[in-house]
Length: 117
Ligand SMILES: [Zn+2]
Image 1 (cartoon, rainbow, N blue to C red):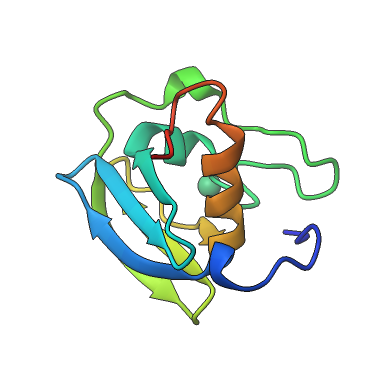
Image 2 (cartoon, protein in one colour):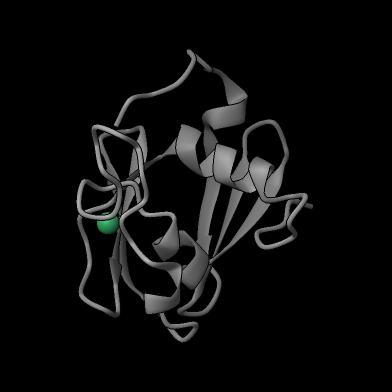
């Protein structure tokens, strides 16, 4: 996945990554912003090559195919820059860079799906 921009610093450094039950995740960033993520929303935003056409950037995954009951089976840190989730539907190929997670949080503030405090 192409990484847009060269954003660095505390805005993309997680201070704390905490699972909030089996279907929610909370990330506290080094600059103090707290972001809440729902498993189903994160799964729908999966950036892997199966879910997004890597040439056109078009999302191949149909949002309605992801159950609202989806949960996280496992979360692991990839390198020092990203998270990988294993979902209850068996999908586990998405690498969510911290920059991408931060952008998801900020861009969804208006829609209110994943809210920042
Ligand atoms: Zn995927």
